[in-house]
Length: 195
Image (cartoon, helix red, strand yellow):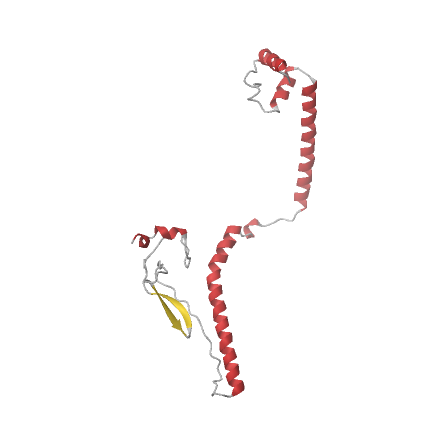
């Protein structure tokens, strides 16, 4: 559409605001010109292009809907989001590591027991010695740090463990901080960090 056609349309139908070149989308201009009754090769070609594009979109949409109908229903409530799965992995990494260590220690004890039985070196008890872990729930959540002044390295049955001697904040109730979470961003809001 040239400038003369645009001016003619503006003055004939008072569509100045609607058909200003910088103000109108490409779809509206040919529609407005067609409504007024101006037919030109450019308008006709544009109309054919939009019709072809619309038919193609309808065809693709029909194929999409047909494909969706063939799919089995999926219970989305049973799907864990990626974020939930990531949080679960982070929570389980420490207990799984401790369980793996405990299993390895019990395997070593079993192998030692087997060597003692085969060699008859010592009077071997009939019961196999095993290490067992016990989880103690604390009364209140607490914040501890890994500073040398707050921790002590102790050996239990030849295994080095970290003992948190000082509790930086023995009754810490920060909202949104998971238990046993190391280096959590919200810990900076704990009153112990301001000491």
